[in-house]
Length: 482
Image (cartoon, rainbow, N blue to C red):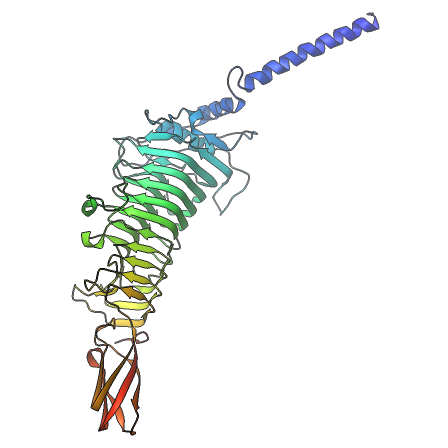
């Protein structure tokens, strides 16, 4: 038996020994020896990950999601920790793809929409670097949601495939496998090797505060899916501030929408042949500024090529020397927008259909060369024959030809005939169906009648000569079939 004080000393020495071992182990995970605990966990996870890389052609590659065990590690995956080069000198495709793969590897025990795993707000953080990539960054085809890529720049390499986009959400089937994916605070340089971002068959995707340049196909392609929102972003094939000597050669499409129920808000498209191409229904555009390519050079701000129902709303936007083209529009609303530099709205006939159009409360400014604010394009010989519920009214015009479906006019005459000519202002030629008139005579009460409204001229005659003023209101907006 040891004395009590000797026993206490022995226990104290044993406790200090155990503490030293624990501190040594903890130090090895705190970065003092072999790296952080999270680094080791990631390396272990990446060793488990398997994937198939495609050759450098247009065949998409597929990735299988790694199996990870539950841990307390952060859901923010910093790409520099995977070996990505933030200087952009070396190719970082593999490192970025591994970071994405790892992020999809630890979903929560839950789903968003059926079949879409909840990734719990997982992020791939680009750490403010610029990364060169030689093939598209793909999300695993197993799908997932509640995920973000943000905070840096992507630059296509000189051998990047010209028929692809730098970031692609490509569902392997027509099923929706991605939901609540956010691409934010990104600068994307396509290096004239294809497009910027491709969103295909995805649900509730957000592109926020992105700058996309040097594309040859689409800055952003939205195909199928539902409710993609693009906001607070800048898109241009060439980086400029207008007046570019290359403008006549601008090509590509800033945003190409082939789908329904999408929203573009507070977006500037500063160089492209077409700012926004619309091939779908129920899309809305608010606060868009298009000066992508002047109409005089063959450019279009927004081109609506939606089959059947258009159902497009364009609100509070700015068309800067480039306007709007709508093919056979059915349910099209344009209001609160500013058209500068002879920018105008063209309604183009393919099958002769124009229905449910409201163009109201806009401002137009031109150079007094006789450009109408709304133009009917019947150049292919297919005249509009189905016209219903068209309202072009309450627009403020300076330096351009005012066109409307509602007009008022007055004329004084001393005789038996009064004529008010509306051909210079009414949108549709030779088409008046509703007339209200008053013949104001101060000395007598003659009999009078509406004689003719052909060629948009209203003619009223009286039975006896009289000094009178004719006041007329005409309306083309509710006409039915002709």
